[in-house]
Length: 210
Length: 288
Image 1 (cartoon, each protein chain N blue to C red):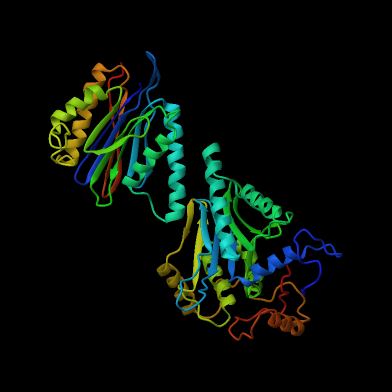
Image 2: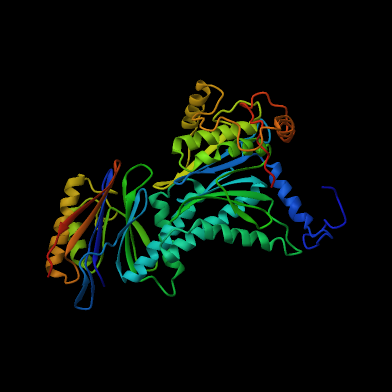
């Protein structure tokens, strides 16, 4: 399983991050491949897994979004995109897209939202999520740090994290720095996208290259 | 054109070698409200008259975005136009999905023409009753095409279709040589002037027209009402005459026949119109 993706939803922002390493077996194919795509104004998807399927999935969603815009004269909302992604994945239930996705964005009220998926489209809106090879290392750490939106206290106390945007970004950087240490498939560079009311912003951070 | 025994089927030729059903379909285009297209080297402007079927209703949409680099204005059966726009949008999406690059306008126009031709050679179909003015960009710059119900297509520097389009065409014929190097703003102003010709006396306001622009570095977009009204006010404040009158003098045709030509131009326009700014005496009305 390739790569790691993380997303955290806040009261008025959403942070989506993924590393940029592409590997196969014990080899690195490239250190600089983006797995994050902006599907709509307020929807960003990060995917781990088999990159050819990820790319095909991105193209299908982009085309469907264009059709939506032609028909409805507006952009798709994040929850609508979430349902579309789920349907698209389930459509290939018997020959799945080998892609493990995390969709992040802002809902119609401007609150951050994160949707997490499995390969065949089962999805849920959550306050934070990690997918990919480093997810087993990152998820317990996020459960610990973001106590209130954690589903471990059932039901989750808050829908989104009360952290500020910069705190969330720092948390994400810490997650990846740690995951890079132990996971061979994670490293090289971290790409972070931040969505908020003023638009979208990209940030990069170097990670260990070994 | 009168009813005759060869006009029942689209698959019946007349002895003179005409397909009357196809020609009748082109008449349907002339019934629709006017649509105008002009292009420069870098931009294409599409403009149309908003006609509402009654005072109670809203007007129909006649300008459609097909892709960032292609837009279409229609005249005739709007339902047919809507369906063809959907076809064009799908073609553009599928092409860019497969080839990761925008569909060249010329290709789209040919596909559309072939689609129209099919309807002229099947006894169980009828020709599309809509004329399409397609503006688009490709590697060689800006283009404007006209697609007929007959399955023919032509490239134009500027063209007008629909009812009272002859008045607009007369204006465009006078000015078209200036369009190639025209700026975006002047191109839009010329479109508004041409559109005004088709209104023949009715006041041009932002509520009875729609303007759309696309160009190199500028994705297709429809201008909003305030911008259009501002542009209309700008040229109406200046006066009746169009700006940048480089070719105010009568054009190339013989000055020796202003009388009959003027009479022909007046007859070609549907109503007697006092507001036409200095209708060129020598201008010959264009034939399709």
